[in-house]
Length: 271
Ligand SMILES: [Zn+2]
Image (cartoon, rainbow, N blue to C red; front, top):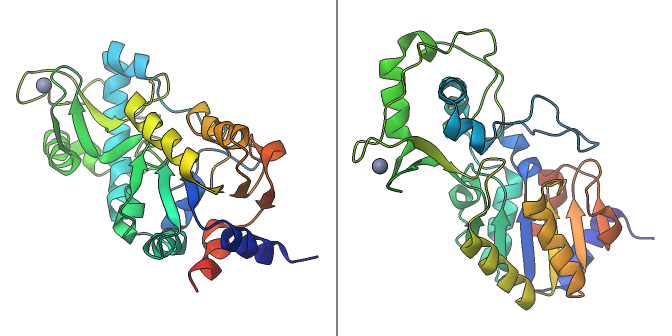
């Protein structure tokens, strides 16, 4: 009986063209906390819904106030060995497509080129009215300038740049509108209650067709937007391996399950 990490090595050797799906567990060692515990349950209050954000000014102010704090850690995060190992696998021509549920941009920071940011990017802001995109860094500076009392708060941060600041009054929080049209600004990430843009899903599904196998890295697959790729791979007869601490929604579809930290499990693949 092979050790499970040897089985992972063998799985990767046996399937030269991998479709890789990554989730929050890939970035925890970069200091970006996970939303869910080992049983796939929420560790904290679930994140804001799109409908709340778009339709409720108080909820929107609260989001931006918490995000002002949360983004600070996000922008200083650096890739860890999980990101570096996957970038190395790509350089060796072993990854047909990397799809990430993370919005932190750390795969690209590690050097991965062919990445689909399924849920968008936290370093970008989009206007809900005219669709123009701008740098979150610029908005961050403007938010700090307009809200000096909030700029000094510290809080526990969550993966999408949100943060816990429950005891602070948000009514006074001042959020700028789109410079071009006056519309509402929103981080260019897919919120709960919002669909993933169809073009991203189509590109990812096409890559599943041309892969030999699927490798899930640090995702419990509890969210349908990621789970659907596991079911698509299974339906196409492609074997699936997963590296994840705790259960995944696709456990009964897996050919191999590695219950380990992503960086520890992947480090040897780049050796
Ligand atoms: Zn606009």
